[in-house]
Amino acid sequence: MTANTDQSFFRAFTIVLAILFAITIIAIIGANIISSAASNDEMRPEQLTRVKSRTEPVYAVNTDPNATQMAAASDTGGGEPLSGEQVFNNVCTACHTAGVAGAPKVSDTAAWKQRLSEQGKDTLYSRAINGYKGMPAKGGNPDLSEEEMHKAVDYILGEAGAT
Image (cartoon, rainbow, N blue to C red; front, top):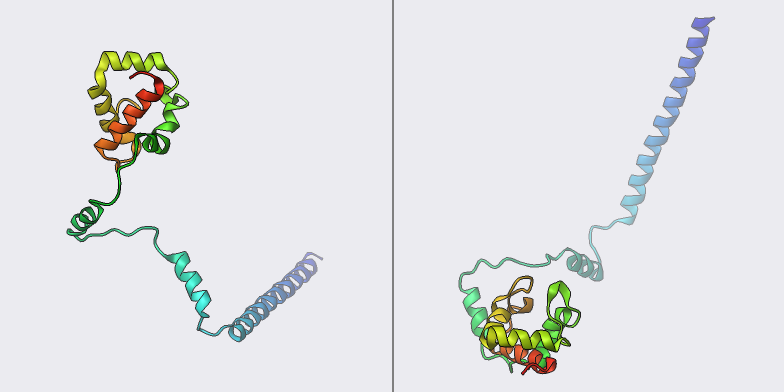
Protein backbone atom coordinates (compact mmCIF):
# COMPACT_ATOMS: atom_id res chain seq x y z
CA MET A 1 0.00 0.00 0.00
CA THR A 2 2.93 2.34 0.58
CA ALA A 3 4.20 1.93 -2.96
CA ASN A 4 0.72 2.71 -4.33
CA THR A 5 0.49 5.85 -2.14
CA ASP A 6 3.95 6.98 -3.19
CA GLN A 7 3.08 6.50 -6.87
CA SER A 8 -0.13 8.48 -6.59
CA PHE A 9 1.65 11.29 -4.72
CA PHE A 10 4.44 11.35 -7.31
CA ARG A 11 1.90 11.39 -10.15
CA ALA A 12 -0.10 14.27 -8.54
CA PHE A 13 3.10 16.19 -7.80
CA THR A 14 4.30 15.78 -11.40
CA ILE A 15 0.95 16.97 -12.76
CA VAL A 16 0.99 20.08 -10.51
CA LEU A 17 4.56 20.91 -11.56
CA ALA A 18 3.66 20.43 -15.25
CA ILE A 19 0.65 22.73 -14.88
CA LEU A 20 2.74 25.44 -13.12
CA PHE A 21 5.44 25.14 -15.79
CA ALA A 22 2.82 25.50 -18.54
CA ILE A 23 1.30 28.58 -16.86
CA THR A 24 4.76 30.16 -16.58
CA ILE A 25 5.54 29.51 -20.26
CA ILE A 26 2.14 30.90 -21.31
CA ALA A 27 2.69 34.01 -19.15
CA ILE A 28 6.14 34.62 -20.67
CA ILE A 29 4.86 34.21 -24.23
CA GLY A 30 1.88 36.46 -23.49
CA ALA A 31 4.10 39.16 -21.99
CA ASN A 32 6.37 39.06 -25.03
CA ILE A 33 3.42 39.36 -27.40
CA ILE A 34 1.92 42.27 -25.46
CA SER A 35 5.23 44.14 -25.09
CA SER A 36 6.20 43.72 -28.74
CA ALA A 37 2.79 44.90 -29.91
CA ALA A 38 2.85 47.98 -27.69
CA SER A 39 6.46 49.03 -28.16
CA ASN A 40 7.94 50.98 -30.90
CA ASP A 41 11.55 51.85 -30.23
CA GLU A 42 11.02 55.57 -30.60
CA MET A 43 9.74 57.84 -27.85
CA ARG A 44 7.60 60.88 -28.31
CA PRO A 45 9.42 64.23 -27.91
CA GLU A 46 7.65 65.03 -24.62
CA GLN A 47 8.72 61.64 -23.25
CA LEU A 48 12.33 62.28 -24.27
CA THR A 49 12.25 65.70 -22.61
CA ARG A 50 10.84 64.23 -19.41
CA VAL A 51 13.43 61.45 -19.33
CA LYS A 52 16.25 63.89 -20.01
CA SER A 53 15.14 66.26 -17.22
CA ARG A 54 14.85 63.38 -14.74
CA THR A 55 18.25 61.94 -15.54
CA GLU A 56 20.29 65.16 -15.67
CA PRO A 57 23.04 65.36 -13.06
CA VAL A 58 22.40 67.68 -10.14
CA TYR A 59 25.76 69.36 -10.57
CA ALA A 60 28.82 69.15 -12.75
CA VAL A 61 32.49 69.27 -11.86
CA ASN A 62 34.40 71.79 -13.91
CA THR A 63 38.03 70.79 -14.43
CA ASP A 64 38.99 73.82 -16.52
CA PRO A 65 41.70 75.71 -14.57
CA ASN A 66 40.61 79.01 -16.14
CA ALA A 67 36.98 78.60 -15.08
CA THR A 68 37.44 79.99 -11.57
CA GLN A 69 39.27 83.01 -12.91
CA MET A 70 36.51 83.66 -15.43
CA ALA A 71 33.81 83.24 -12.78
CA ALA A 72 35.62 85.59 -10.42
CA ALA A 73 36.03 88.16 -13.17
CA SER A 74 32.33 88.01 -14.02
CA ASP A 75 31.31 88.41 -10.35
CA THR A 76 33.28 91.58 -9.71
CA GLY A 77 31.50 94.85 -10.04
CA GLY A 78 28.14 93.09 -10.03
CA GLY A 79 25.72 95.06 -7.95
CA GLU A 80 25.23 97.26 -4.97
CA PRO A 81 26.43 95.99 -1.61
CA LEU A 82 23.67 94.95 0.78
CA SER A 83 22.70 97.20 3.66
CA GLY A 84 23.26 96.12 7.25
CA GLU A 85 19.55 95.48 7.66
CA GLN A 86 19.43 93.30 4.54
CA VAL A 87 22.42 91.24 5.70
CA PHE A 88 20.88 90.86 9.16
CA ASN A 89 17.51 89.79 7.74
CA ASN A 90 19.08 87.34 5.27
CA VAL A 91 21.80 85.80 7.44
CA CYS A 92 21.99 86.92 11.06
CA THR A 93 18.37 86.93 12.17
CA ALA A 94 18.11 83.14 12.40
CA CYS A 95 20.45 83.01 15.40
CA HIS A 96 20.53 86.53 16.82
CA THR A 97 16.75 86.88 17.15
CA ALA A 98 16.20 83.64 19.07
CA GLY A 99 19.62 83.34 20.73
CA VAL A 100 20.48 80.05 19.04
CA ALA A 101 23.66 78.33 20.34
CA GLY A 102 24.40 81.13 22.76
CA ALA A 103 24.28 83.92 20.17
CA PRO A 104 23.45 87.22 21.87
CA LYS A 105 19.93 88.34 21.06
CA VAL A 106 19.50 91.67 19.33
CA SER A 107 17.00 92.61 22.03
CA ASP A 108 19.62 92.13 24.81
CA THR A 109 21.00 95.67 25.03
CA ALA A 110 23.13 94.97 28.12
CA ALA A 111 24.92 92.03 26.47
CA TRP A 112 25.75 94.06 23.37
CA LYS A 113 26.95 97.08 25.39
CA GLN A 114 29.18 94.78 27.41
CA ARG A 115 30.60 93.14 24.26
CA LEU A 116 31.23 96.51 22.66
CA SER A 117 32.97 97.93 25.72
CA GLU A 118 35.09 94.82 26.43
CA GLN A 119 35.97 93.78 22.91
CA GLY A 120 35.63 96.88 20.78
CA LYS A 121 34.11 97.23 17.33
CA ASP A 122 37.16 95.88 15.52
CA THR A 123 36.93 92.56 17.38
CA LEU A 124 33.19 92.35 16.68
CA TYR A 125 33.89 93.02 13.00
CA SER A 126 36.65 90.38 12.94
CA ARG A 127 34.46 87.75 14.60
CA ALA A 128 31.58 88.48 12.25
CA ILE A 129 33.88 88.06 9.25
CA ASN A 130 35.98 85.11 10.45
CA GLY A 131 33.46 83.35 12.68
CA TYR A 132 33.51 82.77 16.42
CA LYS A 133 32.61 79.70 18.48
CA GLY A 134 29.40 78.33 16.88
CA MET A 135 28.99 81.18 14.39
CA PRO A 136 30.37 80.41 10.92
CA ALA A 137 32.45 82.94 9.02
CA LYS A 138 30.28 85.66 7.49
CA GLY A 139 27.27 84.03 9.13
CA GLY A 140 27.57 81.13 6.71
CA ASN A 141 27.36 83.22 3.54
CA PRO A 142 30.84 83.44 1.97
CA ASP A 143 29.54 85.76 -0.75
CA LEU A 144 29.22 88.67 1.69
CA SER A 145 31.93 91.31 1.63
CA GLU A 146 33.74 92.70 4.67
CA GLU A 147 31.94 96.00 4.13
CA GLU A 148 28.57 94.23 4.26
CA MET A 149 29.58 92.42 7.45
CA HIS A 150 30.65 95.74 9.02
CA LYS A 151 27.26 97.19 8.11
CA ALA A 152 25.52 94.16 9.67
CA VAL A 153 27.45 94.55 12.95
CA ASP A 154 26.66 98.27 12.99
CA TYR A 155 23.00 97.49 12.34
CA ILE A 156 22.86 94.96 15.20
CA LEU A 157 24.53 97.37 17.57
CA GLY A 158 22.11 100.09 16.52
CA GLU A 159 19.08 97.84 16.97
CA ALA A 160 20.37 96.72 20.37
CA GLY A 161 20.90 100.32 21.43
CA ALA A 162 24.57 99.67 22.14
CA THR A 163 26.12 102.38 19.95
